[in-house]
Length: 330
Picture 1 (cartoon, helix red, strand yellow):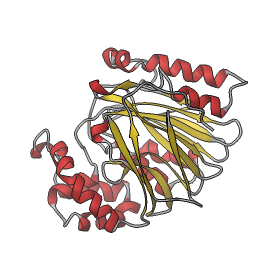
Picture 2 (spheres, helix red, strand yellow; picture 1 turned 90 degrees about the vertical axis):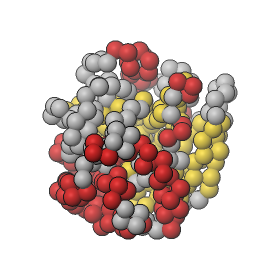
Picture 3 (cartoon, helix red, strand yellow; picture 1 turned 90 degrees about the horizontal axis):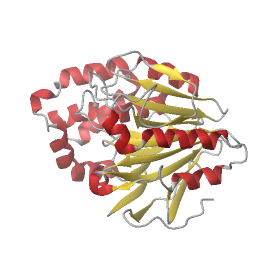
């Protein structure tokens, strides 16, 4: 089992995005309409809520819709308003010793991975791992802010945006953690998520976001797949969210631990998962050094690095399902 990751620098949606979207749209469409077309909001609603909550993204959204030939369903999908429910498992930590760094594992089904690390300049320079065509799973901007998402471990769903577009919006419009927390505090989301932020000053926070209760800012550096307490026992047991959170807290409490040693922990159990046959495993580890404006995307046997100063377009193929070998993260 393997994935491909392409590094793509395209300042504004253009031919590179079109090639991706033309290829991926048939599968996106199947997923988006999996509960029936009437289950998804109409285009007028989708556009109006985007204009209300994320007006800065409307020029980009308009360009994306034109690339999608103004198809009604595609335009609704691209708004990311009330998409079907989806779950992911993640571990993330804001590291503040030395250069502030956001380190995270993204755990998901590799069949549904967009496979793009994009450098864009929609509202400001942003580098991040793409999801749902133009949303982000994690990323950083040139102002020195990094943000990542983790599923919150709750069955509840409601009316709101898919979290990848929320991550995109925060990085496009915020410069630091305080600004990010304000934006996250007013955006509606359709499921529960834990969003961890760190900026180049070393400030950090995690925001618990939910469709059915107010957001809560907690000044915790580590987050996995539960919030104040476990609310979905079966999911918690399957993903080992308690064990992963406990390990991250132990790492943060160890005064001798280095960032390199922390990265090694992300490359082995319980943080690193290989349950791919059950639709759930670690697709990558990302380390965003916001002081340097650089990111390393890491696997047990290889890594790629990119930054705002040096972004080399390339494609890597990564074999996922095999024993974890020895790897010394630098």
